[in-house]
Length: 404
Image (cartoon, rainbow, N blue to C red; front, side):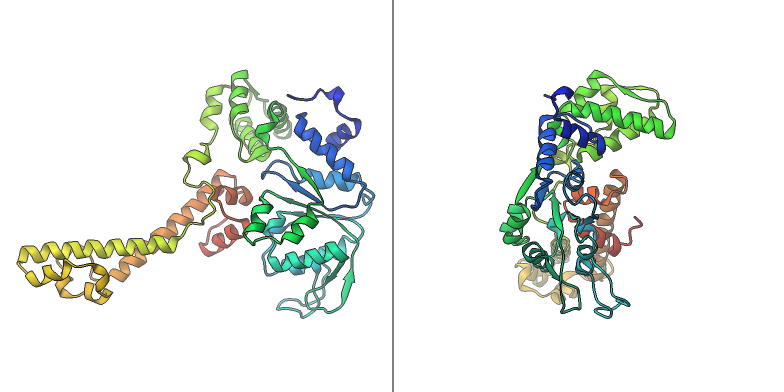
């Protein structure tokens, strides 16, 4: 149930207006009020919530309503910076400290001295960088890459993540001491599905903004269409809703969008039907290739046994009746296994394996391209859909030669 505008505290209403935050759900109002309350107190804040829920607004609220509002505010996407350069980006480096360091450079912690740094996707930080960050939080000290001179900085850190950091700590992917340092104050941003009628307000806002920006006829949604949208999960949250509405605003300009059109346009529930559902276990393509290789050898042996039986070759039949594990690959390629031109399999099984490998790589490439297309080339959303980290997606795009 939404809160009436008259019941929203003045400071919360001011923050909503300043940062163009749409919605009156109790969970959203509580999160904004919590950010305003902690803003004047120099404590580290951890903002949690699903991707696309709007976590990026809360560090801005904390900065603007705090004593550091006249100093620098720097937002850093930790997942978008390569692991090899992230220390240099955050802490700076000295000239000649690594290949390509042709001059000294200030890092974000030096640039933002006196202000606020927002570390988005903080769970993506390498463990070595986490140790450096912990030192900044505890003592305000850091070292540039390639330097032995300790420098001081006076900054406030606000971090955000869509990852369960407790589980990340249990798996050894995130430092426990850093977690407790970052989460002195925690703000939970509600996902769109739990914000109820805020979906209607956001839908109307996005439709009106699109019509005004591109001078098209505005669209509207029927009540049945709204009801269908209210029960949908919206895994991409506000970002997904905005893309969804803008597609209708472009192709159905001036029309009323029906429930039927909404249901046809909503993507399938990934949690139940998609092969791209998130998983704690990454896809093991090497295991798949090994399985295909063993399958190919088994089929070859079966064909050889059939040929030997027809030809009356008892010796060959006896050899193939035992387990394949006892024979090296070289034996499977011998004449006793029918390795001649009359066989439906080629005499070059290694070439067949290479072809299978290529097919799997092409399949992987097509899957990534399809995910990027479904998410309008938004790599962060595509990585979530594929169940991989953004850094892994960037690496796969480079390895597979995908034109992003």
